[in-house]
Image 1: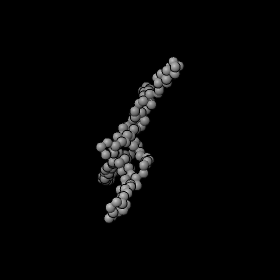
Image 2: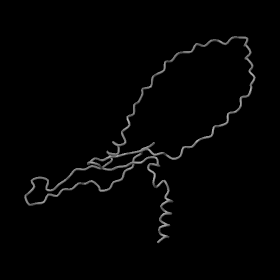
Image 3: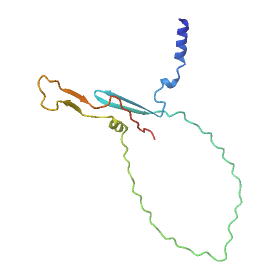
Image 4: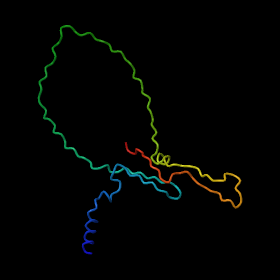
Length: 144
């Protein structure tokens, strides 16, 4: 009995922090329902450790000699430059869709069907069904 307790305590205290921490990956997405609404929460994770780079050593400045150019016997002719105005590039505005809206659109939706479709008879059961899958999977790029 004591061995079992000691073993369970040893396993409890050796659980890695990753199993307990939240959002240590690149992103966490929680999808749940509350008051008949789908609530999607996405959080950006820490993304791992930050690396600190050591500063590169700067080379010491060295003295260089400068010799002025010798004058030429004949002057160079002056060439007038032509002016070409710059054309302004049109700015493109990209509207990004909200993450919650993108995830909500991925949830499958369907209508409710029933039979008989019209003129239900007395003492005849009406059968209702929906064609939404019980389980669906989807993949969304959140970061990047």
